Length: 292
Image (cartoon, rainbow, N blue to C red):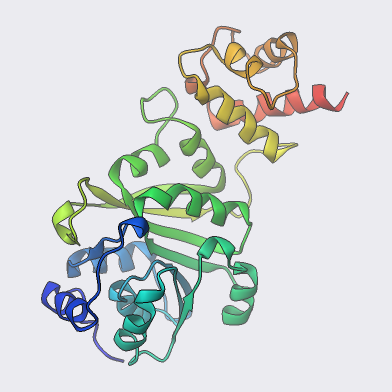
């Protein structure tokens, strides 16, 4: 199979000139131009020959070439129509790649996994536009598609938030949501000069190993996340006040305080100090009240 050539900045510039490509600000496009980083991503994703890989936002196909070499099958999903002819060119020597011009959030990923790997869990790899990182990752989790792991390039501060522990400044709703679905591990930090054009912020490669089943038992998943969001919407407020002010939680303040005390906490506790297990317990007690 052909050797990847697009990790070289010169080859990237040539392709962009050949197709007179202009970067679209609305898509937040930053293409990787560092072979060491590309190799780190492939290692972090632990791609094997039998794997089916879903790549989100392949750009001009830089990482896709590396993925095609390492994996059995690759589906590259690109929203920008202007990039499709470029991808057809740069990936023409790789027979195991399928290019899909689509918004990944609108794609039937369960069907795609069925078609490409008989429904076996896929590995997701992406260099995502930073403005849409969280919606895409949460969208993948919430669809309950068969996914083994998600290895993504994200803004460094987002990676820090994903793996933050209770009581730290980075800990928030994103930390809890990610850790409910997966175990996060930061594989590498990537400076701005590894991209074209250069982003203003540092980046990180983070691997999310998806849990086969969530680490906590909850009676109502949607309620759990409503409670988590309400707890961090007003960080300065106590947990009891934050939850009693939440418009989408139809539970009285007395019930909230009672639920907080049942998990062994004072009514004055703040949401940022609670662990995922404690939020699960709180959610289950409140679910019981709502069921009455």
